[in-house]
Length: 237
Ligand code: ATP
Image (cartoon, rainbow, N blue to C red; front, side, top):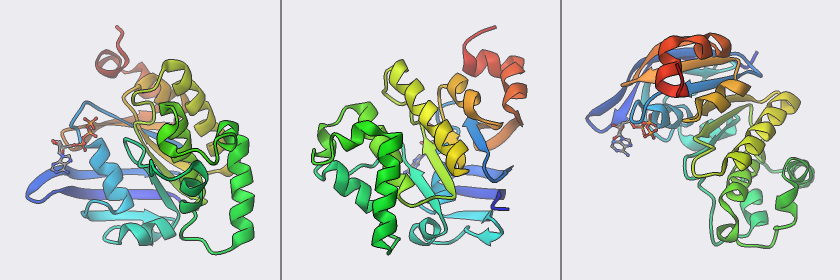
């Protein structure tokens, strides 16, 4: 099984510690939501998982140790990170951005197959192939970022605030596609999201992070039913 196991994870920036011993497990093929207030360390957690931020502690995927490895090595182990702000290359075309996502892969035929598969999830990208990424709408750019991540054929997809700056309708469509990818490809997903309703709608498990520590964990239904979470993050009760 390619479970993601995180234990005793400590990470920060220089002397400033942000994560204080974070631990959780995501079973292969499941969606895990990370909730919590601004500044809790959610983005830092994803950065630690993809190796962008140095971390101490345990991170394993399917038994392979990822903690302490370079972002490139971690990507080669099948971890794709869609950062906040999307990280698309604006002057490059849609197609160039997508092909860049396959940089760790060699087989040309597979790349062509994957492009075709990505157009089935995101038909709009196929109609924009020769357009500069910078000319796309926010929702299309998020789709491109997700499409580019899929070109890695990831075992684990890390999504940071996919709904940021998008209209509700576009956000719902995006989450529908993430759910389809998870169901069809069996890709494990860790999603950081301010919109707790949406994230809990596609997740099996969820964790609430506060000042660098997990303060609450449970199934999506348990977290949704929790009084305090409902008040703090779901905007009702
Ligand atoms: P948000 O929802 O606001 O993005 P978050 O839960 O994702 O919040 P992080 O972005 O991980 O939180 O930030 C956690 C802490 O780390 C904050 O205090 C932030 O100021 C600090 N921080 C984030 N990035 C850096 C950086 N590059 N250098 C130094 N400190 C940073």
